[in-house]
Image 1 (cartoon, each protein chain N blue to C red):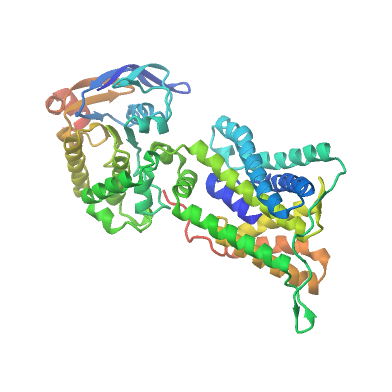
Image 2 (image 1 turned 180 degrees about the vertical axis):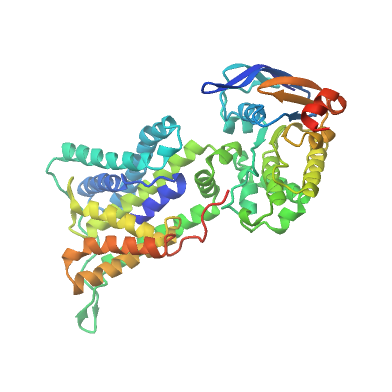
Length: 282
Length: 235
């Protein structure tokens, strides 16, 4: 989820709070496909495609016209934030309407029982290993896309300096939609992995997805919102700290702890763990 | 040939350009001079599609270039180097250059043009993997012009390339612009505060005052025109 938020930020300079809703919707798609085909390996890529389409749709039909109309610079920063928050509510409402109390099931494709090491079961299970593998694969391939391909260069240029990019012949509008689509696919992956590893089911008012969104956002900021590697490191760091707190202090503090970490990081190292030194210069 | 007729541009209630008409022949370097707020930048931004025209026409060859998007106009050979060293500081020198030719979708040709640009500006060649924000002002201006050349333009729109540069560097940049125009057969519109420097290298000059044309003519004639000298050249 952190990856998805970082992706949208990097390609359009928008903090996308609708990411949680998009992930939820894609997970529902994944659950339906899993129900029909019985294969997790078909459901995951198709859910990613669905996530990409949903995300591109939102960008094209909501955010693009919104930003076109709000010409003045002052509202440009927080208008999309409010808009994506609103969209989060709308997506959840639509899902509730369509699915009602129905629950989509996404059981883990691999065993979530821990490996047995010298007679004891450890926390690392085949399922967890799979998640780690998929996240690493996602991070590496996305980093390569951003740093090494023409699409990546266009995405970075369009986000840093849309006007110069247009003058250089880049179709900035198209590139933004592409950025959102990639982010939507990453968000769908997050949603599916979270569900299979967690409760194994999704419902329209799943609290799990609000957590996913909040923790994803915190992880993105901790890691440095400019960096994909930072997003993953932020996610791992956050997960580790929260797990320790959960084990030694208690579950009730986890939510508060996440925000405390967020505030501490913002105070001490606002650019995040991997963030580039120095801000933008003209 | 660039043909501008009766071009009028409004920024909200303010009229930035009022019925401006002039022609620039193929291969000519036209200097547009005038004080702050004369409408020079607006003129370029309208020609490259960033600003909307209220009235009038502008044709580049057979293309009507008003009401077109900048990314389309680039594909018709119009390249605009905007004011203030228009490079992207977060990208490397190499990436800034490549950006200019991405739309051509031809890696081989792009690489070839890149080599030509590096031959033109050897300083950029030494700094290819550096971020653009590590460059000096003059190098950034070279990079901005280099990126523009990457798109193989026919019509080059330059907005104040001398802004904020040291006198020696300004002279170099002006000389480069003159050489490029001749060597590549470009048509150039050069917008400048530095009227003397611009008129020295230009073929024709256009003097803007408060959004209207105050004088046009050959650059040499404008340079010697007593009225123009008094108002814009300061002596």
